[in-house]
Length: 242
Image (tube, rainbow, N blue to C red; front, top):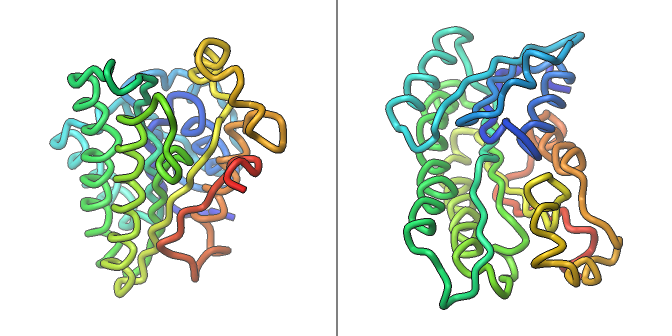
């Protein structure tokens, strides 16, 4: 579905980002898998079609991110997909919010994401095509007790997605966001029993999402199967929003 498409994926060290990078490459894409660490898995993967290029980059390092985007453009002449999956998460009641951590989370979840959209959209505008996929959260749609600071950042991602979609539509660039519910990543499973053991009862499907299930939606939005979709916030939550 993505043969020959050049894709940049952040947060590719684990979880949804790793699953998305692997799926894109299997579907024939040329994938630049970005993360601040944890990309050792790339060298262990055998592929029949696409390519995987690991890049250890802090998305808050504007200079490093700009250099990477310029190098990808120089190497291939085009950038077709940006999947902004990197993110930090917090579980704190309002009186316990750690504001230093909150500021860091804003830098990663919002500022770094917007900066990457800005850089890549310049390339996509010249080619008059492209798909940008942002990772929001169902928490950003409906809120969550004990996650005010995190939900604030994901609410910002949703607003940024809609505004970017309006601004970039005339350049034939699609901008959509995915809003997962509870996803069974290793990071989430580590806090599930302690903080969210009862939350699973709110999911009609009765289970966590698998990272691969979110990656499948990323694939759809990256592919030519979604050429008339933009500005959408798509839930992957097992019916929790119903």
